[in-house]
Every structure is written in C-alpha cells, then in structure tokens.
Image 1 (cartoon, one colour):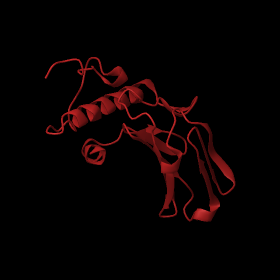
Image 2 (tube, helix red, strand yellow):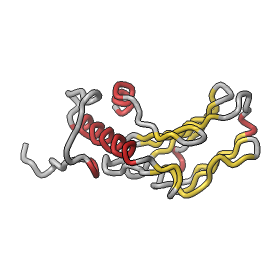
Image 3 (cartoon, one colour):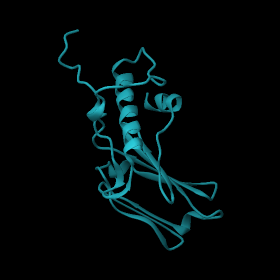
Length: 157
C-alpha cells in the first residue's frame, strides 16, 4: 500500500552533498551519487540497527548513529548503473509520528520546510492506511499534523 501511495504522491527528499534521503512511515531511503564506473567491490556499506557507514573507493561518505532504530536484517543496499547507491532501511517504529529529522544524529538534517513537508506526507500516508477506499496522494493538509496528525481513535464509529 505504501508503494502505491509513494508512486502517486512523490517523495520529499532531503538533499545532501552526496545525494539525498527520504522516508515513508515504514522505510528510510538513501540515494548516494558515486563516481561513474564504481564497482560493488569498491563499496563498503555497514548497516546496523542504530549505526550506518558507507565508504566508496576508500573514502568515507557518511558514518554515524542513525536518527532512529531500524530492523538490521531488513536493511539492504544496491549499486545501480555503476553510479548510484540505493540504501533501504526498515524503521522499527512505523507510526506517522516517527518522522526522522535527520539521517544520522546531528548530520544531514532536514531544514524546517523539508521537515514540515515530510511530516505532512507521513500524516497523509497514515490517513491513506486508515481509509483505504480514498486517495490521499494529492491531498493538501493544514493544521495539526505534527506527530502524525490528529488522533481519531477515541471517536465512536
């Protein structure tokens, strides 16, 4: 369901010097531009539940503690067209209110506007899950969306 929502609504990337990262309720995606012709054996990528490290051709791209925890066994990376590394991290907390403000603690932080857009998108994704018969991919949201938006769980059906 997230994939379909993601395809329709697009991503809200946080651009960095090496590429970008973005998120859904369930996953964090990292895209790293590498020199053309890079081979997989020139890539050292270590993905833990709380740490991540990427080195390409002996040069550190990033290293540090992840903003949130991830499912270590579900993490993966691929090298595409010998010029782009894609990393997928599965969040352990998959609630709309779990919007990462940075990829690593204190590094690659989303600015206020990007953070606002990410939180809005996760809130709409939550609405989509709660109301599968509706299409929220092009919806606009205003008001209280921080922390995953309003909580309607106490309302009677």
